[in-house]
Length: 332
Image (cartoon, rainbow, N blue to C red; front, side, top):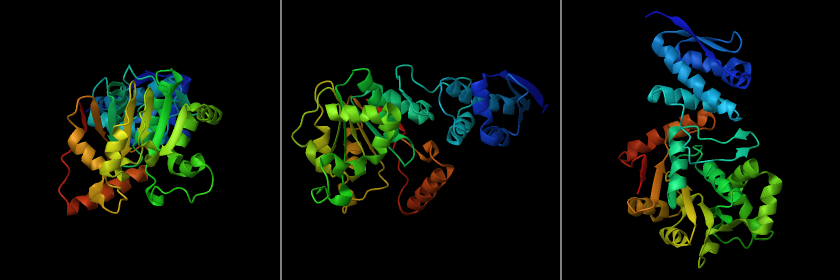
């Protein structure tokens, strides 16, 4: 098949992002599709077969579109775009951000989904009163939930952001730890605080916590409460017992939304069969207003090694049990 050249115009910002540090990003694209990508100025020239050029062009357009919004383009973004182009080689593949979802700009640029599953997850958060985000570490379940909650808080669509998770390592008995309640709980919520600090800024997060607009508490402190006009994040939900899960899910009040995140493969409970997350997914999937987004190893957006680790563990687990027949996405 003849190899021809095609020129794609790019902004200076997009061009730098596509090339990447030490030309690393463009090297990944060339290796994936066996094309030659050059930057003569004002854009890139793609040389290769028509099919290979088309796939490389989709990847470059996806990265350029994200870069032009101010987002930082990392190697993980490139890998996600490459995977999407191979899995779904359609002209509209680059459009993965639902129009209804407006996320804030973090310290490292605009926040946007990096995979189709992440885009579906954000869309689900905007439509469902209760959303479950389940899957391996590094898929953005918690970060995107925090970003979405922060966007609602900024726009005044909720009065507060409530964050909770089980403190399994301390058996929910936090009294022996030094400090006030926030100091006792904060170590268990470090991933969420890191996300909120990146999105809102450290000073804004501190101010909103002091005003009660952002609240963090262990699961035990949720009992007996009704959370109205709030966005609630229940993190590490695989370590909730069935009774705890029922208790926290029934805290939903008027104008409230909730997202429950967890990884069913990392249950730390003494009795893994008592996991409230597994149980809830079985009985609530078909309930109106509930959405379930299942992430997979290919959705990992951390270091490439994380995806390989997740795949290795999944393969090992599959040897001792039947493969799960859970669907990728479902909402009612």
